[in-house]
Length: 314
Image 1: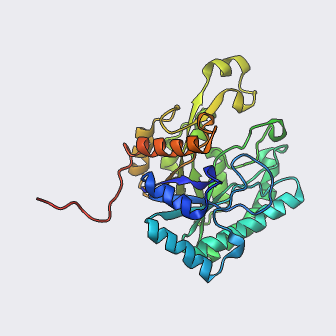
Image 2 (image 1 turned 90 degrees about the horizontal axis):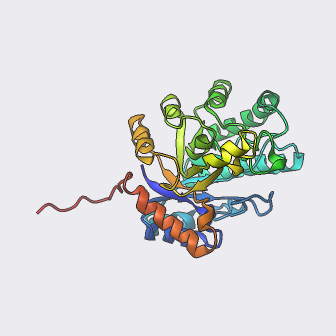
Image 3 (image 1 turned 120 degrees about the vertical axis):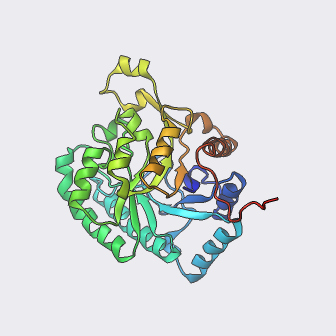
């Protein structure tokens, strides 16, 4: 399981600096942010360390040269919009750019892109479902044609009153994943699994690893701390931000030893990428670099690096 990080946390860096950071902090891979030049404003969005609109053989060669130079791989190309937005123009931009990211992943020989299913937050799951199938059937077919896998992250994207009550992402629970993979059974569609989003929903984050083992395409390492005092005071109908906070791995309620052991037990050998969204480390660029350094150091207790050469016996 190669250890990596999500590049969106350092938008100030160019792609070479992203790879240099990975190499310096003992990461083997990076999930590279690929947002379009203009899109909806949301936290951790808008970063494009690879511009998928300008893919050509020279640009591909440049990116591959950097991977070779720093001995850091790209685990996936990342773009997390709302392709089911009730705003037609926003949805159209999202689906079009998802296609460009899929094509870029194929051109780079990566074979993986990560995104959201999306959702109209004002509608129920049932009411969203026909449009979801209409939107995602062609996208999944497009991914199949390009031999690229799509990893859907399970973040509910529920942070403010405008996203209430459903959030901006439909694929958030095992019950919904089960239905999703039944209705869209393509092997090109799977999960970018983040345990932290299940913690605050009070869902077991280990059992789904067994049931959906064949759909685990990519994993995020992010932790969450539940403030039980706030939850008992505000109740479950409060905005989730009232009673939980995203943390670095090891500073929240995820048991990382059990989580990574279970991943190994079910046969997962793919990347695990740190996603820094801890407000304690958002004050400056130096703080965010410190978060990456700290997270690597902590997770190396559970994810040993695979070196290309074996140590010499004496």
